[in-house]
Image (cartoon, rainbow, N blue to C red; front, side):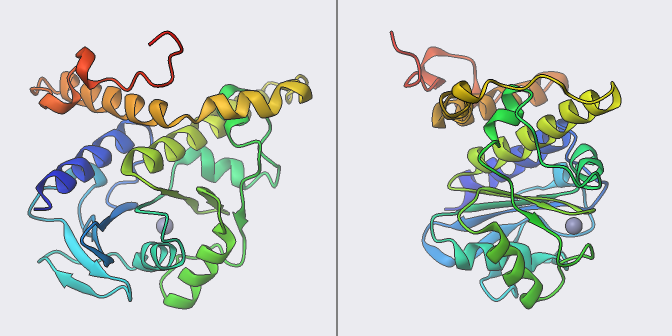
Length: 254
Ligand SMILES: [Zn+2]
């Protein structure tokens, strides 16, 4: 019953690593079970986030206890359990240690609207600074969920990011876009610092265009295709580049 969900989780792990979100065997992704909102599937410990298989994915409950699966559970499980507990609208949580996000977080500067990606986050990104240590117990997990609030993204200072989406596609989109926004700002900082920004009067409209639902799904499908094409594997039918597979809702003339 969860085969499709496991398959999407596996593909999400692959594209996250493709996008610079891998950190050897650390970092994780979870997805809530549709028929049991107090349980979720999660990447196991000991393997890379791109090494998930239908068999090694574990099942965890809302208290952070593993209820199914042979592989170990990450110590930072409480990021997932507490965000999923606090946010019924969220079904997928990602925690990674992307290099540009971590380096950017050490600058103590706000993310600026200097790129399309930076504009996407111009409504503000919460920064969790209560600890720079790992989130290894429920109270810390609850504190992260509180800091996240109603946002879809959060920076863990000197540590990484947390992305929370209604769908796997949305959470992946938020995570990869934050890394890119930080990378572009770091480039500008290294070149003497950004001097020109997205025009104030254009900011709100541009921000609305940068994170459309159709973009999340289409970008996810593209990244899954790219992974399969690079490794010479057959692209799964639901991700193939065919007219039936695209979400065209964002295109005015259909
Ligand atoms: Zn971590």
